[in-house]
Image 1: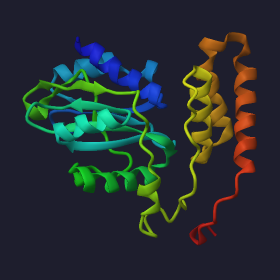
Image 2: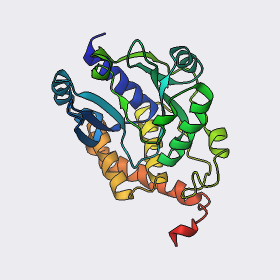
Image 3: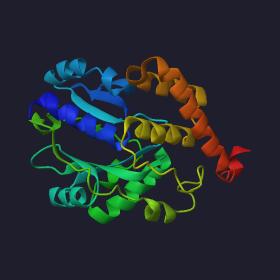
Image 4: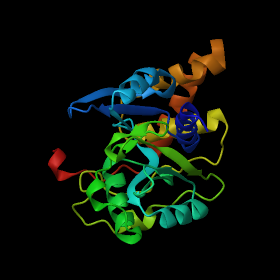
Length: 264
């Protein structure tokens, strides 16, 4: 598989898992960082990243911050463990070097806010031997199809991209969180990712996740309209408005979360 195909394979899997916006980052040889935040996949500056990678910059990616995403990142997972995870759950496994471990992007049954992803990472890392130093809820992973200059320029490749196994259910991980681990966002049943894999079904779960993360509904509408315009044409505005209205009604019908005293 060509390098560009490795990249698109990773991004397509993310999109099917319910993620469609990302932060792209690179670290140049002199240690400086450059960022492109909150970009839809079609707007990621991949040609720029490839040119920088040739000049020995390392290329990284993560789901865009500020949104609940159904994806948890695990770093430096032993290859045998990574393969076992991909057989049991929907997961993307990225090999960053022959000598090192793997990056695992584990699809979750519910969208998780950043703090919840952090605790889920901690819970999982202690059980599978992943790197406990890469736990933050918003950690960067290497983008497939680029050279890893930390490891003498070896290629970063997707080695497994499973979808048929079930997504991982994070309920046990979150229910065992210390009281202060998610204190600013009390654990409650998250919005379940729809089993509808059509574009409309994925967009419904995506909109619900953004509202769950307390994003401004106007911003959610704008993002959905941008996403749906090429597919829905003249009907995109009506579709976006109707979908957002349904998601808002669903959210308001749910029991309100317990107010954090620190917010008063």
